[in-house]
Image (tube, rainbow, N blue to C red; front, side, top):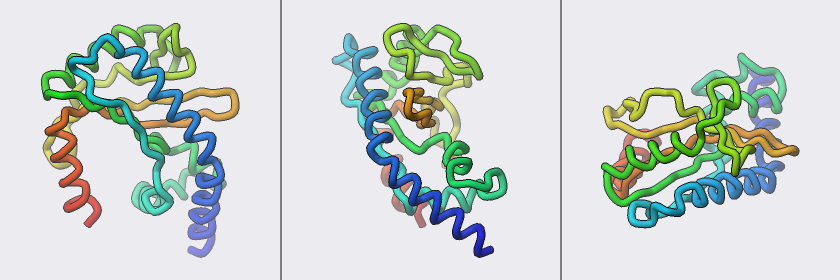
Length: 181
């Protein structure tokens, strides 16, 4: 049991030491998505990111039992599909489907493993073949896409969500009240 806790602590330390790299990767993803959707200013509210906190990382490692699938901190981090979170926030619920469609149009070149890229931003890969929207455990629908930023110094997984203002509001409440408790 002590080995598991050591692995978790070492993983969190490695994750924290990569904050600068994660910032660069997330900034690249945000810049690429903003540029891709720049003609949609009437629909698009903002594109933002977050880096997974140490507390959230520990919870996920334990909940998903990542310590069984990897024996090193690097191995655990490589299992994460959401070391970063990227949010495309739009005005209305109908805009979610529209913006997802625009991403599918732009990211149309197969990159391997179910991922797609676009010529303008070849380091950004999106897994766009999954049925959308996806049904969450809380019963709500969400446009959720796995992505990767593949920079020379870092290959990191991220979760892309497309949410309207009202869905963002409700998911924040649900996340705080139900999920975290």
